[in-house]
Image (cartoon, rainbow, N blue to C red; front, side, top):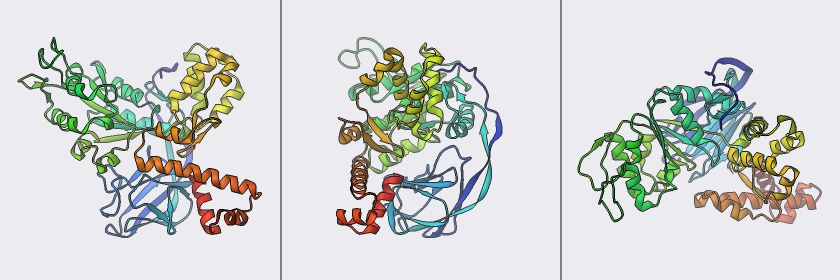
Length: 450
């Protein structure tokens, strides 16, 4: 995602006069009395849980490793359950995604947290609209760029998290290119692109004759990245049996080729990217806890495109010019429609839509296949002829999360249809559903916030 603007070093200025600040206080549970501040100046949602990567870390054994997250959006605090085992409750009702504007008590496991609005804080945003090839001028991105700039100047391992297509590899490239190892190589190893039987050879190399077909010496990615940066892409998909070997190489800063007898020193800066929730993978036994702690010294969570207000039009114009289009020939109505789309494939999907429009013009609308549409907040909506189940299956989510998305989609459609049939009358719709009005209202509220 290159950009026509020249690279700039992020500068700071007050871009918004103020933003709300909330206090999160433990009022009941093992950590009673502890308190944290949450405001819009923070570049990523704060994680709540027992895992070491959580900013709001609890010791309650009934709380999941990465139980929930909180962030400030405009004047409200957004609380998101991240597939916890025991659920997140507000006023004794289970919630998955909810916005809070006043004092409330939430419960996670045996811990109760009180949310209080405590005033406003001056919000400092960078004036830069890009970091390397990563482009964006939304508040979410402009809060993120200074953090990325600081991390680029260090040597610490970084885990880059985010949905498919958000630009994780582009961020890794930017960190490498603006850091002290920019003169060295950037080598990318994609865990999903190599057969499991060849992973060890690709990571560490092999000697001639090490196995059938190994006719010559082969250098692994660690050796090829010496003096530079190694990005392990989709590290959450690395087979469990290979993870101890990777951990050993990282800790010892040396590798041994398959079939070799000597350890070879390697000097690399390690970055990792994943679409998966590694804390959840650790809890499920699919990812080693010690490897996670070794690579997640720092963590950057790239937001999905649907949460980057205003960036769709900016990116669309950028891609249009980058792909050779005349800026004056990008229809305004197309940009407006794209701004309203949820973009489940994120920036990558948007770029493909721009390319299709350039190639086909108005015919692009007829050529487009019904895509799985993701409702803002994570629910999947499907166009005519689409299949909600297939759309969710394509995301390769853990079973519990995939099941929840399908249930949410069903409840959304069910509630909407009943309300339409009863002219929006909540009481009659609830009666037709065979549930109490309070329960029907809870479902409606959940689907609105989900």
